[in-house]
Length: 360
Image (cartoon, rainbow, N blue to C red; front, side):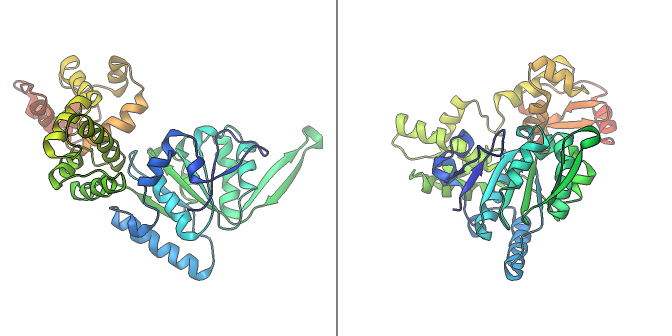
């Protein structure tokens, strides 16, 4: 894998190139990087996205040009960062990694951009959280491969345009609606990642188990996959916890019954709902009569951040039909009542539900 530059809060003097084995932060630990596919041919799922990227990469290599800028969006854990690494690997270039919240001002971004070589990849995670001043600084960099900066102040102020090498910006976001139109329209490739099927997650679970040297049978892989909320990151996390349980409390082989016992301890139920998911639904049902209720009220009751509920909890509950978003707020669906062993509300609920679905 090509060299990786990781950036937090950047100045022009303190960035360094790190190999994948020396990246210190938790999300890029050696084991996690080891489980990530390195080539598009190894990537499981997201077939339409992968096919689009294959074509774009092959065409760019034939023309000996950089790729267009790429925007990847979707819920957390679906492979946006992994795809960014794969793109850099397939193109044979270096990747520089940073995030929207880490870039406070234009100077932070300038230090990164001026060190990029021809066709290098700049990956900005949580790009929707870029400050406005940094976002506007990025426009000419993306479009004209140049940055403008000001010397001095007042009547002595002078503008200078610095030419950049032609780089590739890959942005990742869980909240594509929060991107401004000018930024969104500067991306040439715009792809959304959706939740994975259980069959795809079974493949990922078996692949990761092989890489971790953990024996697993088909039913064990299926049981982990169906409780993983359609998300590869959760497959790998649950697999590691089940591996620990199997090695300590069983013979080391991951089977269906071992998965049941291990995930019961983890607080993951038959549908893959965590304790936070269950508390979210129970709050709507118990505290607010099944809804509708605003997300701010739910967050205040649970003492959780609104962004956590919107980005982490809601997408899967909406996907499996346990949550309904209406113009008036959130409602628990009849399936959620049944799953949590609550009696459905009395007369009038069905009509109210049908009315709310008009605004879904």
